Image (tube, rainbow, N blue to C red; front, side, top):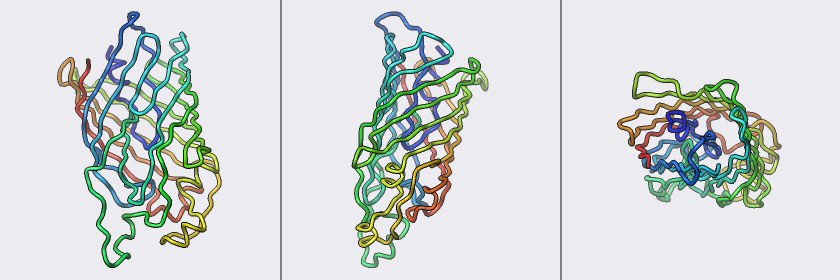
Length: 286
């Protein structure tokens, strides 16, 4: 059960990563569930130097039939092979407003509300530089769908992958996430640490939604016109530390470093191509 407890909160955090818990043989009709609450410090949007502090709910549920909910993603394990996992996957792609704030995700895809209110409109609009996306179109939250597949090289190491489609206001953004995870190695009796790394590849429509600037947006914002193509978008590494305070309570902390690449890194929306996200939360197992 230590493996499942760790995997429930082991993924490195990211904006839209849809992480899948490991297949876990459970008695028919049973479930395993974790809920919690914490805090996260993250960039207001990908590529900004401005940060926000947000409440961070945590949720993970897995049923014996293979169904799971992992934060704002859900899916089903279809394979019986202990070294290979695959199945359908749904995940919520967060939206973006002119402040770039309002929705944050932890490593299992949970969403929270910003603890910092909207930035007041100053008289001198130059003071907004680096903190807002005034003039840019809002991007609505979207339900994306696809598949996941994970392969265990050893009981401790697994390769992860997922493909999701439907992001953006036109529902035509697609992303492929590829990664590797080292699961649950112990540091004493109460502490477990995991590390992960990965890359993200997106199509042109995805990059143009989140990193592009249309002619209309350029005419009413401080950003210049830019229409990126698809390709490699980012690389990320992360480490998570879980501290088992009791058989039911856990303190889980996460650090993720992400670097934008390719056409995304060249976007006029990007002020810095690398950034850190830090979070910590208490979680309770039912």
